[in-house]
Image 1 (cartoon, rainbow, N blue to C red):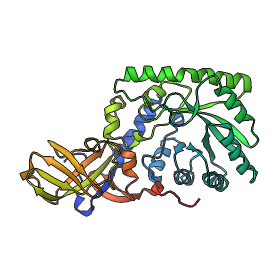
Image 2 (cartoon, rainbow, N blue to C red):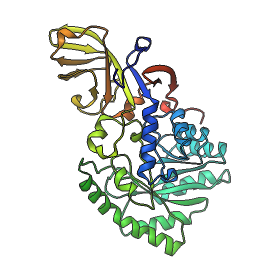
Image 3 (cartoon, one colour):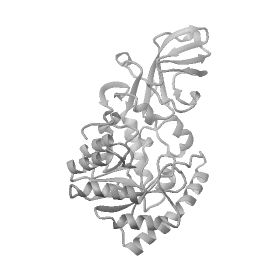
Length: 369
């Protein structure tokens, strides 16, 4: 029996999400190994799995700090007993008050958010001051991805210094996400990442010497985890690594991770010779990539995906005669994060058997706050 096959698969409806806990555990151990055996250097992102049980698995290994993208994810990790949680997003609109309410509800958790400009930092401080709270912030630094963040240039120190001086703001450090480096060649990826990161050291030196700040640096997602892990003074914040996927396997094979999340689908029609239709539509697998980069089937060969809609995926296959309606197909998503978010629950697989379900609780936009 292959590692992904499930003995009682007939009890699981499709499309469905399977999570293999033994492989998740191995991936956690591998991440700790990559940072020199020190789990305190990990600040992993929860956006990939969005499950309290996966947070608990990491905490049993000594990981206590977590990064997240939504208020719901923040509430999930706070409820799970994290010591520190960073929402890696700049709070605007109603999110500011929601963040403040989470901070009020979990006073023993160090909760922080990102800012990349002075005006937003002042607005955040004003809301927190109304409840006599101090807002913990990290300066979001853009070192080349150009998605969010304060540009890393001669003015970055002045922006950081001004934010530090705002009443009711506690300047925690720098958040430097460099997800733009995706070449499969590790040496080239490390060279490019190191070059872009080099100015950060100068910024930190000034913040420490001129402002006497104790600066925490959070750096690196999954593609840049290898370079980040080699910087002994930074906290590493990968997320996809715990479930892994076919896309990042192509980018960072050196990590030696196991696929730990699989999507199942069933053949629902054989409309014409050479064509099968399965029940894995846009609503079940991340569909932002080109059609040939959405799912990698594990028990199907010589296929070509050619049409995808909300509830259906059509494939051209060579062995059409040997495939049957109702047959189960197992596949690894190319991008696991949005794929997980499309499922309300994960079917937990232990020793090739489905044993229970875990709720993908933080796929919701709102839990309590």
